[in-house]
Length: 273
Picture 1 (tube, rainbow, N blue to C red):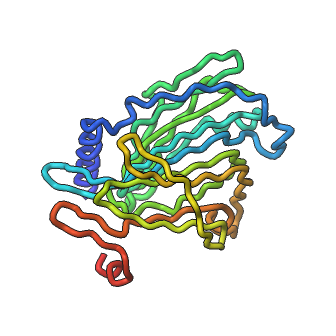
Picture 2: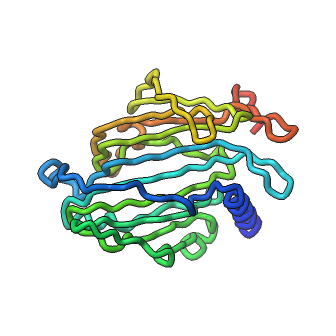
């Protein structure tokens, strides 16, 4: 089963690359190291997230003559290192499982003298749960360390995650264990795919008014933006981060997948799944 799932993930990724959806073409935007913030602004944090931009696009993918519904997440995070303690943020760990695949990882550091240090592709390490938990062999981590970072400089990374089971996408929490100056999440879909969302602040549901933008191919894109988010402290007995931060939950409500109608609009539809 594991080998079968891996083969399917590879087929989906190859198809996306052929369609030009891969981020082999991703280029980091120009950046200037801002004088603020400093450690005086966040004395309890070794680093701060300057900008966190995530997008989720629901689309139909054709693989071996079969049309499937998938979701593609892109994530670009830019951080400023405030102290030596913050240098530990150069090591990034991304979870992997049987429902999603992480791909197209790029990362770099910007030093105080303007030098840019790119991460080599062979710095990315993959580990699975075969050794630690044979009963969950599809669980694991993708780990990489951004080279060349220094206090006062910038570190940033980008990756894509492909969900071959869109029912399994998580609730998106906009806050983090680090201070976040700006967090953005955008949602879009194919014309034949409809989704619904809920927005909240901690335990409260909120009637959100996301920005309406367009994708490069002219589709509507809903954009949620939050700023100056406090630290989410992870402690024994603490609640889920969604109880402590703004969050967005999204579900595909209907989709025309080939000749099949996918629906998730009522509890009866949930029971059918």
